[in-house]
Length: 365
Image (cartoon, rainbow, N blue to C red; front, top):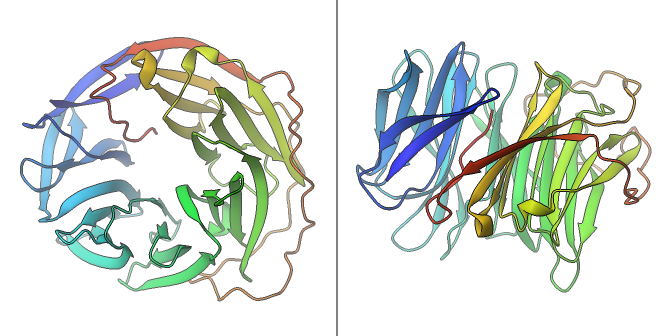
């Protein structure tokens, strides 16, 4: 099997990244360093993580990082002058661990950050770079059934805070940073005997505050994105949700959320959504994987509501303090408006044929 990189600039172009020498491939993640494109991927044949960079039309080998345990998830980020590869592993006993490889000006270092699962694969996590070069990491600890947030600082310290402690089953988390490095965490909680919920948690420097985004009896997959340097009220803060053969785009409409139903019936059911904000075109791009039709699709869109009023500048600290009962400095949002409105998402009509039995989505940027 092969690992391939797909570039869409009006035409879909494929580049072979590597031959995997095995019929199974786990995880890959793509990032940029200055003008360089880099990919990290789990290499089960050689037992480790391989990193490659794109140069003169080809993916070139960069470094191989050995890892003896089975890799079950991977996220590659670049911050300031440091590369970070956050990943999860499963030990022979079935326990899962959150780990980190990092490299600045010297050799690669590796850390075991936390045990996040026992007797089962646990790989619900995400990572994002902060403006000071440190790395933020969010994960579901399914031993304690809590969502946790940590900052791996440039001096090697790792500080952890508990975000949510009433999680039943967490299916997805996503981490973004607003202006002033304010952490924003989207998460999908499946309440036992109840609805599935999409929520956000934010820390403006005095503890975690929460908002409801969407709930349904069935949510298949979801992703979140926001424009770089976004503020608390920005309209360009979006969720794309697939639920019961329907797509719903939900974006910020301060103090609540605007909801639009999208007519993408050809792309159902979807099992994977990868969504990022395109700052240059002021729109989001999203890859959708529909395994029943053996297709991946690429769509673009942007919110239709007007530019919101900025909120007062808040100050965040490198290590968020322990949450306090102090209420958030903004009003509680009303329930989300689920009345369908005309969609502002444009359909590019891009249909990319992929073998449904072998496609394993990585990152989009």
